[in-house]
Image 1 (cartoon, rainbow, N blue to C red):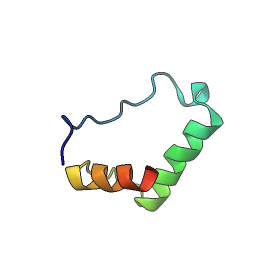
Image 2: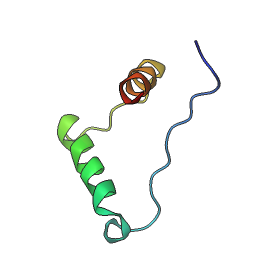
Image 3: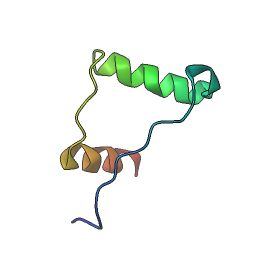
Image 4: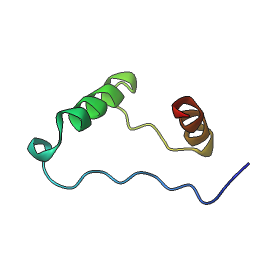
Length: 54
């Protein structure tokens, strides 16, 4: 079931020092689990993440 177009989140504006500690932690977590690669956003991954967070 698709409710609408899939949009990707936008990156925070500004420098690293302007991010909150929570934002920095999430960025580091994603870097660790992706081995430094930017994982491709796919509809399947968006659905899986949405289901995980629901």
